[in-house]
Length: 412
Image (tube, rainbow, N blue to C red; front, side, top):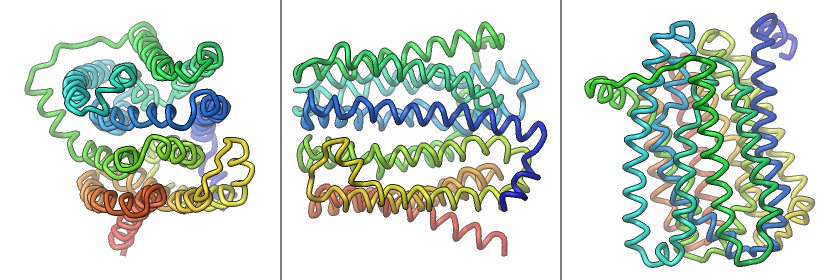
């Protein structure tokens, strides 16, 4: 298999894939390693309860992250990859992305404000929520979709590494006592906004992109065209983020802190899976015949990562000072969900979406996510933190197996 992969990905393609893999892997790995460096310090200084409050606030904002992105991570990337040699098309894509993101960003700010002032537990920690909100602005400004589309992911790496390093250094400088927990979301937001502004500067100065005032008809058409993939990207938030969100409502912020600390380990593996998925996305748009070999590579990676999580748990829990009795059970459940997550990336993102079967992926995602959303309340209500882990992994398996079944049915 490796010989075939080497023969397929050679020459210019191999150079581009390798450069993109190194860029994204450096970004994602450092992006996950730096929090692992700071997390023991944060948990010791702020405590699991205050850390849980920060995570709980972020879980509310996360519902709106997908809304402001509005699936441009895939649709705009796909369009840029196709029209990267046409300045007129790139200006149009750039203008549509900025305009629609601005509309949904404003809508998000309004809704979040209403929610925070309407619910007493949120209102009591309103400072944390409003210091977390600017992250949405930074993420909306950051042109990851453009750099990925032109396969120049080194810019994503440099800018995001700047965010992470800034954030990491500032944590050790400014967070000194338990009452400093409000500084954590402030630093996060400052880093994201800064990177977003620099990214926009690069687009305008280096790539000469120009913003065009668009007719309402074009904006409406773009929104309608993005709806299938947007739903496909947003609906998983209902099971993924709701597990953390409901855990905070039905239990307490201490459990949220423990659950998120364990989930960071799994997210490290998720990042590795996403690196490969995103690196191959533009490539497979151009060379669809490489899919079968890509599939084998992804499955092998997911199995190895799952095994590593299970054999290294003692070292990880010692490092993070996690002493919860259910910690290994939670880790094992979440680790097994990695394979289901990989199946979704293989067949959803890098097969059906590449082949313009957006609605098929959307329907599968809606069904699986809604089942996960419905199961979230009883699972967490009766089983607490273990129920949150079960809900997350079951939903990932449903999404992955659903697309695997449709793929098998299609190729028969």
